[in-house]
Image 1 (tube, helix red, strand yellow):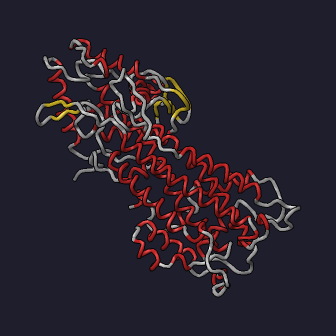
Image 2 (spheres, rainbow, N blue to C red; image 1 turned 45 degrees about the vertical axis):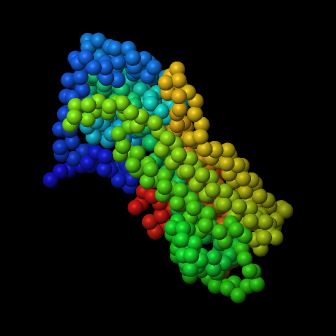
Length: 509
């Protein structure tokens, strides 16, 4: 009986677990045989007369230059050194772990021509938490993530730095700490390691996982806002959403129905004269459902990309061929990341609109700015302004990156994806959105205070209780920022998203 993952068949939910620290089970039995066969095919080409890109030729625009057999190892080394030109802050450890695992998953499928021992080293670095220091900037997302992946590979060769428990140390020293010596790359190994979309994909997966948790959290804060403003639950009626036929819309409407079921606040105004609520309450299923659909689409694309082979050229041992193509072009990742960005921007946008409604006494029916003794107290006046600022920033960040391109490598690489930036900016967007949702959580909980002794529904009472464990109710103005940070930290720990028990989110399938 085989143990471990079959390369190329790791489900999206497993990548989520791996990103958040789960151990990697290794690869299934029989994986090494295919890798060894592929590497033997490459070695047979080394002494041959045929020019094979990345084996006995230069790279990019220099692919027409033949390299002598005795220089193939030096070719790989110089490739890595010349391509290690990244800049900017280092990728965080969780992303780097995912990069290593994604790269190992691609190489282990036996079409890259790499030695099994190199794959083992990648997995050992993850297992022992000895991680390459990889700058976050310098990739245009075509010919793969060349610069950041070169920094990764350089550390295997003893160059650059690695992180051990958060401390930067010289790479050779870090390798020695786990009983390893720097490696020399064999024919094609350098190009196999640095071609590929693994950095873009890891960053996009991080963005996806954050966005899914934000969406689930915002469903809870949106339901809290409904009750805080004595909104109607009629717009969540299943019949309305069934005739629209949009899957995400139907799913999230069901979440709202469950979260608000049994609310004494709702029961208190069933026969009120108000005909319709503002869109930020009434149209939540339509907006959040559309966001869910975008995340589902992106999750499907990224799930495939996580299991893809995206280096070049590819080796096909069954026919003895090495074929050049363009799988390194990260356009699918870029477009998926752009869709995630749209979803994050809209999740925050409609949350901010609910906050604006709650602080407006003429619309919400609540005290102005959710403050007792309004005037003496400013309440949530400026907290909503902070949300507006963050939402506006996310609007700019949501501009699609995949529509941009700039030629590189003397016009050999004349159309690029910009996937790395498309994915990297998702973290900033998600952090902005998280604070917006945290402020709504605080505002809605404060709004519910004015309806006591009436209580909201049981799941929403749990949401308020969790908040009140770190943020007391507001009776008078006080230093606000630290409590906003505490609420955002609770959100980051999935405190609210855990209240959504339905399978909402691509990686939960």
